[in-house]
Image (cartoon, rainbow, N blue to C red; front, side, top):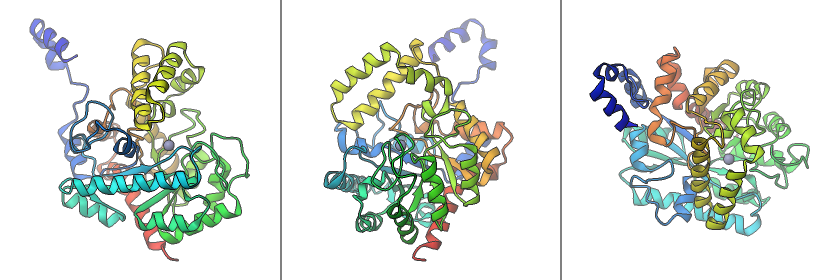
Length: 400
Ligand SMILES: [Zn+2]
């Protein structure tokens, strides 16, 4: 693309003056973005730490969405590393895999002391930003990893886990998932005990992935604000993983925050419908990918994103561009209020829209919100202020 622009520049210089590179942001946006504490509440980079031998978080990688150089370039100050094992993996195996991932995040911090700092509180995140380090936090994606045992929840909290998504794609023994057949009518009595214990431990209750009834049961049970760590708007893209306007308003009344996911199928209804129809070329590519990757989760995600991007470029799937993120943020702000919206990319775990290929592109969000007329103070809240406020509230209620 750059080469084409240069060729045009030689022939018709005047065109160049009106050309603005797609990734350019205004000096005001850059300044604001640098000043703000930018927090991303959901990144699946942990799978790469475990499964991808070629991955070095300290170097710029040719694939994936997250590493230290690209976080630095994109002004990302804090991220929640997801601790995730598939719903089908349960019992001691799930626990072992969760502990391995917690260790991998802590080791990444230990081996990159000049760039990363382990953070478990909002104050830690602020300190890391002041010290020009990236705050590494942990969120557990799926309550099945506690193996129906509050003692394990307490162990995970002690190791630094600061939110837990009550379910993943399938129900567990005490909560229904949004993408499974209802089995518990929301949260069971034990599920409500889990929420209360999370409140007591200062672990945020995350309602991304849960069934609508589980959401409403959790919001009735919790004493602390909750988060949706990576969900978008169901009015715009009718995916069960997204939130209805009623849910967004209820979350706002609870003092919580919806962190907008950038996954193409959660951003665009057209893309969601097309990808669920399963285009033959895409299905064949996915089959080949499954054979190639086996059970390697990092490989599956990297390859899955590549396949979706190729399909978008070939016309096998509709193109989704990064501006859809802004549409979701704006809808959530209009629905829940500007104090209740943040960023939960799902980097390294989903299909990013075109133009938001990795963390280095984040300043474009600040630039677009400024252009939309958002105040600098409101943009700072969306970039990270809101989730930090929720963390502080959850910390204050700890032990109650
Ligand atoms: Zn997820």
